[in-house]
Amino acid sequence: MPANKEHTEATPSSLAVAAGEYLDYLAVERGLARNTIAAYRRDLTTYCAYLERAGIMSFDEVTRRVVEGFVADRRDGGYSDASVERALAAVKGLHAFLVRDGIVAQNPTAALRLPKKAERLPEYLSVEDVSALLDQDFPEGEMGLRDHAILEVLYGCGLRVSELVGLDVGDIHIDDGFVLVRGKGSKERLSPLVGSAARALTLYLTEGRSRLAAHAHGTETSAVFLNKNGRRLSRQGIHAICERYGRQVGLVGLHPHTLRHSFATHMLAGGADLRVLQEILGHADISTTQVYTHVDRTQLTEVYLAAHPLAHR
Image (cartoon, rainbow, N blue to C red):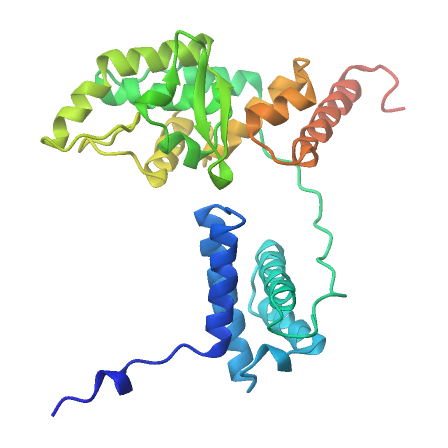
């Protein structure tokens, strides 16, 4: 006789249930992006498993020492500083949520501070490298038109990969010179679409996209960038395109985000206002945009050292 289903399915622990409520809060009330929620879910699943291995079955039992032990366990596991910091941020957010909702009385993480991140300047290409990338010979036909447009738009509009793959035909307003972008947390913004990016995208939309869409065999999609089967191109597909065309001009391991960083660096070097750049990039906090001022200062120092006759005395 088959076992009762009630006894074969594991009941979620009280830890997992509370963590799930916090994740629901982040998704519904805070409107965090799906990728962020997924990362927090992985971190909190690991955290709950750590607590259960330590014999802790309620968040009331968690102390600061326990949380510090979890952080040390992550570091000992070889996880990067960024991964450990994100996990601690997820744990701190969870415990603050539990206190606000009256589920527990004390927050053991209240006095814990996230370690200050080492300042990492984003990688970017020179103007000459970007020109070599975009001016190379692309294959004839719809795939070449698509790939050229992808690289032009990544650099010309400063988009994230997720924003690029999420573009729909209705988001493109070439005559008005802008594209509607849905960024993190589903926030919308307008990004200028002019010059070579507008020309490459127009050529793809008028001569290439319809040929790719025909491969979908009746299944229509509103996506701008399509794969060989006529469906929305994936993030992995964009990565592969950047790597392939980058390699052809000596830019090995070219990442799509490098084009976004290059866009921002070149805009700032060309005199763009920081607030305007913040708006174009879709940064919620201007401090995120300010990292490019450091990049610009680094460029100025390099030029000075190379050009000033007394710089090395």
